[in-house]
Length: 131
Image (cartoon, rainbow, N blue to C red; front, side, top):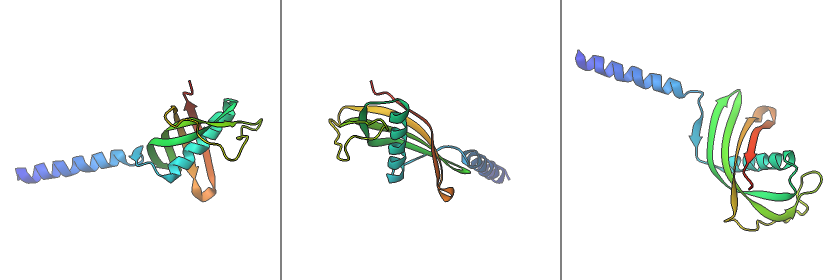
């Protein structure tokens, strides 16, 4: 009797914990999709901040996802300066830009919302510490 009660209690607790995770933010291993979203976030940051210098994403260091009516992504990534300036449209002045020094990298964070079935992706927040 006691064993059944203990097993039932454990099973209920496991179900409650699993339900609490559903719809929550989950850490995932960074992949190519996260890298592309980090690049999109960086472009948005450079445009919004009226930057003169071009940067490239070096590495996505952390990625989390939350399934809603689409997917929310939370990304942490590192960027480094390239040898290109940005034009008046915040685009690199050259199509062959190279990173100057990968060891000289700066942290960025972004939140991106995506609905692939409606071809909609929006960078909702992005910040970088380029100092």
